[in-house]
Length: 418
Ligand code: ADE
Image (cartoon, rainbow, N blue to C red; front, side, top):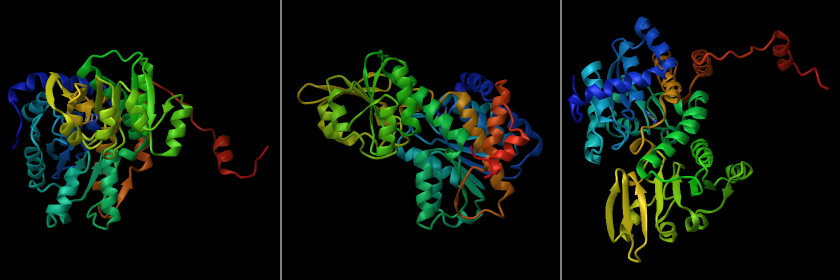
């Protein structure tokens, strides 16, 4: 075994958290039981670049039970839960590389360690593992059967590899599955972002002016939850359709320039760069709180903020006070890194159950269909998506109706009108 973790003695806490998470991940447990019998990954190495959390632990354990040798590295330097990493190594024999708070060199070195194991399949969250293989390891690209991608930002990146004609193995865009995006991005990011803000600040949200930049699935999840806690929510958007949708959903919509002057809390969830610029930060009220829930720490101009900061101090875990020359202070959560995983625990297990079931079944699909797939970004096959929804409903004890033959025929026919 090979690993690079903080402290193996933390495993005692880690294993309890993994057990707790697995209770909420019944779909993945169902898949795991089948994997134990079918062994779809026998003899294969799977390289995973994922947030090292209890939920990820449940995924990699299922892959190992399916016959895989798993190598797990972090997909963000601040999201690793060191006790989970310890338990994965000690209790489950998984090779883990990641320490919370590691620097950028160590983060990339660990990704390369996984690549050097010559993996057959890749599972990515953000695209770092896949793009580094493409950039630096062209020889061994031929060996890789395929990969999966967990998040919106990663899918955009890998589609751009495809568009540039340099994608060298098939990728399944797990993010885009219905049973991922509709739940993880919305209910997961919604709840975990609020959780991260509250753990970092413990502020009262009721009555606060809460600015959300981006009204995609993640942004709308955050906005809905913030409103539920009594905040006045403002949306900033660049897409006119989404902006209109936000407006009709009852949110106030305005430019970031206008919102900067009145907001108490600012959260970015756009997947784009410099959404909150230095000029916007300078206009903010004394005491404004800023955080990001997008995958990369590019949405808030942290470098610009540093330049205008004359004094800085850590005021709580994951919260830094920045003082400007005029005495005004603003507070930045988790260095502008994705706060739901760095200040909070990430999405609840019950939504990750569906996301990671998509991962598990998509990896199995790649192996089964390896001779048919091209070097393209594929959607998760519909039958996988619907199978996950069906098992999830079953584990929740929910029965739904089926279309009758008459209804099926009606839907197929153009003949009946009014
Ligand atoms: N992404 C968001 N929440 C997560 C979690 N709990 N585990 C792994 N990846 C995540």
